[in-house]
Length: 330
Image (spheres, rainbow, N blue to C red):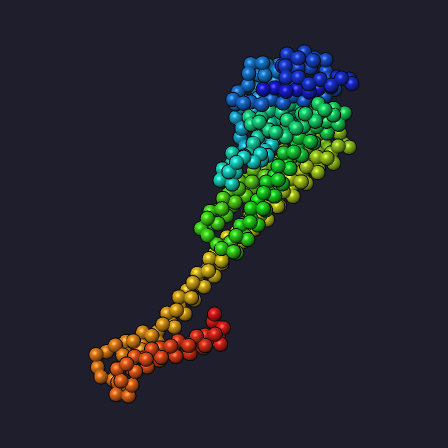
């Protein structure tokens, strides 16, 4: 599916008809943005003709759009620059299947044109497209503005995901401190996988963005270089944030293990106290349970000896509990 918006003089045109794009491109529009969504991972014959004949893109660049590599790249050609960047569009159950949320955005940029190609439906591109239609004086102001807005949305997707991770880790920490369970460890490991997957793709994204920060490139005017330096700095900051989250998730595992250990210690302490408190009962009952004639029998008699033995047990238990309480063992 193709969408295009372009400006010729003061006229702004948006269309989904490839024939109109081809015919109007010959009039050399001031700025044109063509977005192609490969719903079935294939280009139609008309779309292939548009890219190869109308825009004159190299066949290797077109082929790269059909087979995402999930690794950023920048290739400079005579009349355009081809690149691939990656972002995150979260899906349901993304903590368990995070890699399905990673998308690749391929782009062709040259003087006065931007062509974006993607194999997944990207909602932020739809938003930018609608804004450009509604307010072309802002959305289609300059080539640099449009390219910056696209890059900014891609990089911002990492920050949104980090916010989700922070909320998840905060919830897990509170839950672990309150009552650690086996499920908590599973959720921690899922979070760890998400962070490592983000780190794997985010660390290399700067390779693509750094090209647009160089004063030697022929696409970005000097006054707009600061915008793309901001993208590069934002990407570097995200990488640092991901490293911090990876350290935090390790700390969260330590918190879980410590909480489980404390809980186990409390259980063992409780069982030890019970066993210790009942020890006098076992000793006294074992002593008076022998089939012999005790001297106390002559003093207390048969019935009195039973009360004596029970009283001795209770006295020993009370004495031990008082001692434990004094030592602050519970």
